[in-house]
Length: 152
Image 1 (cartoon, rainbow, N blue to C red):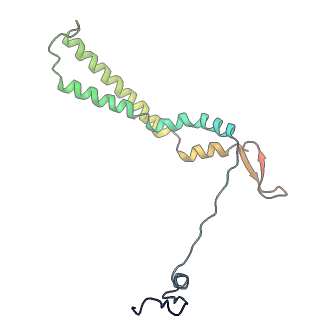
Image 2 (spheres, helix red, strand yellow):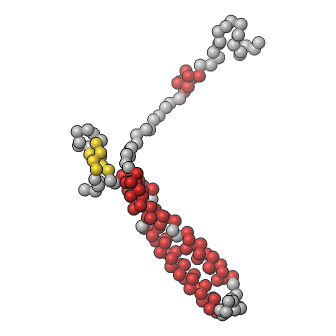
Image 3 (cartoon, rainbow, N blue to C red):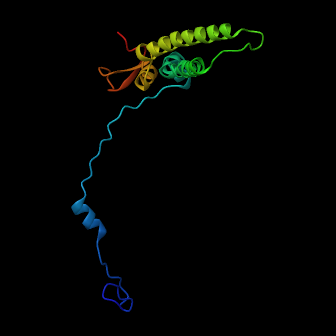
């Protein structure tokens, strides 16, 4: 029998290391549990999301026109347009690709501007959900929910 193993012959287990005392002496516990709790109904969340989600989607609306611009530019720069296709002349195809590229660039600029200046982030989504409730701190019961718009 080694010196580190408890003796089973004596009937009482021997504690080699008291973990709780060791942890209590060497661990500091810090709590940060302050939070706001939102209690609302499904239809109010649905209405809030109905108002805000289109603005939230604007954040990524530039991806489709950017992909189209890059594809059209590659096609325009790498293609010779030297033969007729489907009864349309090569010059007409080149003009169609150039017009499509210009239109896609305009769409990209418009979508990017909307993504930068008129989109909503996750804070606006939460704000839209919370805006129908406000907490009246002067009410007899602190934290009483008062229905209505928070904008005064």
